[in-house]
View (cartoon, one colour):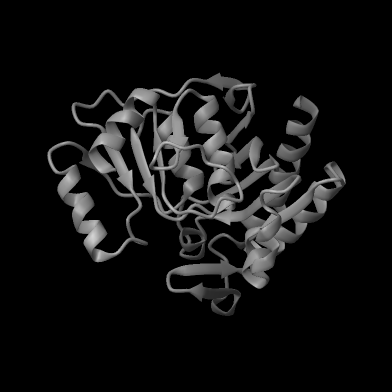
Amino acid sequence: MHALYRSVAALMETVAAEVVLPRYQNLAQDEIEEKAADDYVTIADKESELRLHEGLLRILPEAGVIGEEAVAADPSVLDAAGRGLQWIIDPIDGTGNFAAGRPPFGIMIGLVDDGIIQAGWILDPLTGRMCHAALGGGAFIDEERIIARESGADLPIAALAVYFLSAEQRADIAVRAEGKLTLVDIPRCAAEQYPRLVLGQNDISLFERSHPWDHAPGALILNEAGGRLARRDGTPYIIGDRRTGLLGASSPRMWDRAAEILC
């Protein structure tokens, strides 16, 4: 797995240096598109996905490839997500931030076998930080093994992504959280949110959308670090299961506490 890790990490670093960073704060208006309300894609997303797709097939030719922009162009691509060996690509996570010329944003890659996440990588192109994990092999930042830790705050620090919920659902969560959680702004970037859970900056995260490119790498990294990412009913996050709703926490104990409050 170490050789695979290095090959994928090197590919991501190359794409970041040659495709993503040259476009950062350097996009023309016609190089930014809105796929849906508040959901953006840039020329850098498309070029990054193409390079990653080609590179991952060279690394592991027997695997399929599912990329965010490929699914946007042809939703049937996602049908293979839970079948066999699949690379999962988010060419730029946090595209809204990237398009606006501000951090955070990242590149995310997962490797999945029959819906079970086997390996995950998250690169912060601006700092070079590489978070990665292999199933049963622990989680790492660069070469250092990491153990998830709680913030230690009096009230758990919670970053709740509620913008895809209805107004009624958002109001319900606000009532549930009042006096029990300290709510903080979300980074609009899963490539940043998962490291925050591991590093003790946040204790709890709630997600409504559960696209594999947004969550496969981070879910494995968090779980391998000793935190917990699961469906809100406590069942595992399996790629190919298209239900919505995920709850992440810096420890299993914190996950149980979050579920009592929010679910």
